Image (cartoon, rainbow, N blue to C red; front, side, top):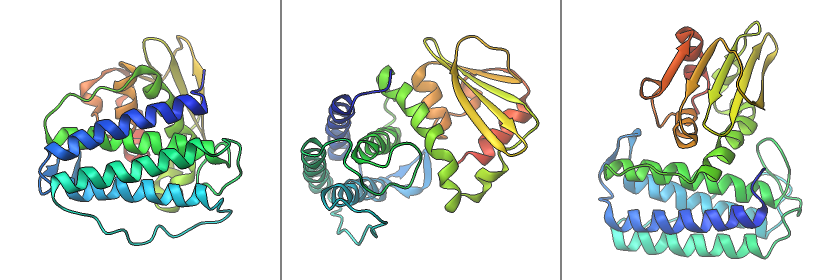
Length: 248
């Protein structure tokens, strides 16, 4: 079952609190292993700016693209943590005060309403929390329900990223299939000449299968866990094609 709006907001609340703790502990000049061109200070500024952008879109009921705008980002760890907490508090207050069906502009797939932004900001925060933890060499744990929803959020939105990631259009084939096999739920991706599609499934035969926990598969899709760390069965060339062209 998809996460409800209340569950999305509650999970986002928890992820923001988690990231704030990491922000207070991490060196803002440290490199981010999972984002090699970023420092943790840049990463935390990116997340805080994204929170503030989403807040504005939902609060103003924007019906078209709003430029994110320049957001001053503090650099001292304690200050960055407080800045992240303030932005997260405002985002959650606006989301919780807004009917999830309220129509607003979105850039991806699925609904065109406030619930899309609750879901997007949950996964924006979760993935980048894992990035920040990589700078501390900490374990990347994600709640199973969040990870399952995150796999589907990624697959829902991936086709719409072609505006800045045109290589996504190269995800085509002649019926080859990729199975993301988790312990409770699996997803079958089929590549066709005109693009690709996905569906939830049970056990299924596939051209290539990637097995792992929900967290493993979630972080794999986002390029935060290499395929070599998971159990792979089948055509590695197809898996390589997916990894190269789904990177965003």
